[in-house]
Length: 118
Image 1 (spheres, rainbow, N blue to C red):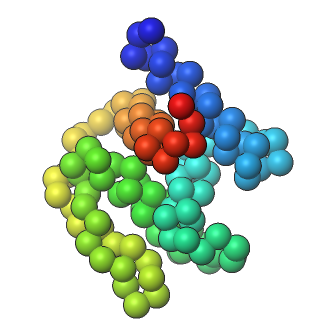
Image 2 (image 1 turned 90 degrees about the horizontal axis):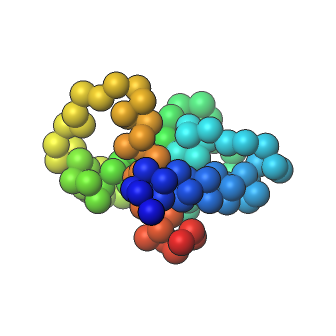
């Protein structure tokens, strides 16, 4: 199977998992999935978040899913138990479609590593 086809299939399984688990059947976009990964990484699953915290959760998710690519490295937990990451190398300049593809691939790999999808 071609790499692009495999990524497409795995992305569909990933979105289906999030749709079934967190959205009452409604489609979830990339930002919503990143938010849910951030919540999972924070480990505070059953609380409401303020607007600025939601952006921080998405940042946590981005850092976490791109960590295996060498862009970020976990640094520490702060006093409120929020994870922090250090930048190891800057992300390359990517067009919107390329950026979306990188994030989808990174999320799929995160889901594979967690054995949520196969």
